[in-house]
Structures are given as C-alpha cells and as structure tokens.
Length: 319
Ligand code: SF4
Ligand code: SF4
View (cartoon, rainbow, N blue to C red):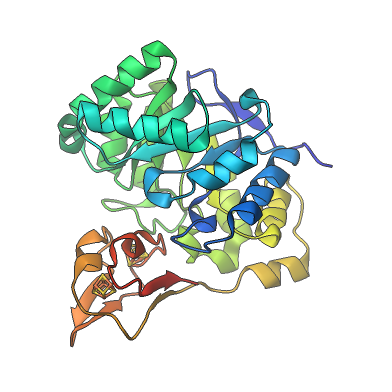
C-alpha cells in the first residue's frame, strides 16, 4: 500500500488535501454512469492509497457514490467539495442541505459557486455568498469557494475576503480557459495565492483532449507552486493507478498508459431533436445546430459533459 501522495494546506483554510483530488463527475450519470457500489469502491481505493480530497457538484449526480464510499469512514479522513449554481440565499441553503442529506454528512468541507465568470456574476451571487458565510460561521461549511473557467473571475475572487478557495480551469494548452491563455491563468492564480486563497485546479488533461500526453499534462499542473491540488476525473481502476503513479513521481506502466489514454469523444446520437438546449448550455461555444441536428466542434469541446445534463432526448454521451 502506498501513501506517498503529497498533502498541502488549501490556502489559509487549514484544510490539508492530497495534491490529487478525485473528480467524481466521470463516475456519475453524466459520464461513465457506474453502478453506485462500483464508483464507491473506486473512491474507497483512492482513500486507501492516500487520496483524501473528492470533488463533486449538485449537477454531477454523484452524491450517492460519495455517500456509500465514506459510510463507516472517519469523516475527518476525507475532504469533500461540492458546488451549486444557486444565487439566492434560500437556494444556496437548499443546495447545501441537499448535499449534506444526500451524502449523509453533517458538514461539508468546501462549498463553491459553480461556473462563475466575472466580478459581475460574483456580485449577482451576493445572497448565496451571504448564506455560505453564515453556514461557515455555524460550522456547516468549512470553506467557501468559486469554480471558474475565467481568468477575470480568478482575479476578482482573489480580492474578495469572503472567498477561501478558487477552483480554476488550468492546463498547459489553455483549453477551456474562456478569456485568456494558460500564462494569464497562472498569473491570476499567483495573485490569488498571495491573497491567501486555496487553489485546486480543474481540467489538467483538457477534459481528455491532452490524454495522449497525460504525463506531461499532469506534471505541468503538479509543478505549479501555487496550485495546492489538482482535480482529475477518474472512472476506472486503470485511471486511478495511472494518476497515482504520476502524482507519486513514478513512471506509469506502459501497458496501463496505452489502455487508459485512448481519445474520448462526445457522441450525439441520431435521434437528436435539434432543440438547441445543449447549444445554450455549452459555455465553450462547441455546439451548433446544423440541418436540425446538434454538431460538436471538437477543437472547442473540453468533454465536460455538462451539455448532457440538459438534453431532453438523452442523446449525448462522452465515451
Ligand atoms: S459540447 Fe458539451 S461536453 Fe463539449 S464543452 Fe460543450 S458542454 Fe462540454
Ligand atoms: S439538447 Fe439533445 S436533443 Fe436538443 S439539440 Fe442538443 S443533443 Fe439534440
């Protein structure tokens, strides 16, 4: 058994997290849709191997996996982050309550505003932040954060004293960063770090687009001094093994690498009704409607799977 994954404090939160954060989107209904016990087993194995940080979201539908995985564990052995799009006081209160009930926990370590864009959208979420501050005072939420694909949002959140943690899009190609390059994002992250914010990044592998260079992509994230932890979507035992090897500074087994790093794609089934809801949902401008059917621009798609959540025909799948 190996426990050599490094841990770091998330900014000034006093929360110690493994540098590998297990992103749960991939095991849930929007992606692999594993049976609950299988996804839970994968999470439990990660904990055994030294990973203590798990990222979920109301949108992901993965609370049941986390619930089963942590059942019987010491609650303090895992750090759980979730997030919601709610912007009202009551809405955010409901979102936090739902997370607590669904995962059968009495506090959550991090609760984030999902997909913020700018100082303006943060201002529009003032009531949700007010609730989160109250929840933090009561000990229901340990730290408040924002997730974002925008450099300008990282810069804005860095200056907000009520925000403890930022979850930004970061990979060496800048894939998915909505308003700048990887260097722009790194500079914003540096500023946020020196403002005391904890940073855990997302999409180090570009949502799958950099999978063929997974070692280079993850090592780029790992070597960033101001990134405390890196969320990586994991859905198979092979992926877990490969990510553990890279985070532990080992060379992944060649056969394991070949099995794991086949390209993923977004599939749109022929029964697409052309309603356009996915087009509106995609914040990367990767979808359009052509001849009554959704089409994906693979140069823009980061394989996040968010469009699947709004498709009334259930005809989108990342495979
Ligand atoms: S097309 Fe879907 S999977 Fe691709 S970036 Fe847009 S929302 Fe994400
Ligand atoms: S939401 Fe689904 S049915 Fe509607 S256009 Fe997109 S893929 Fe087609």
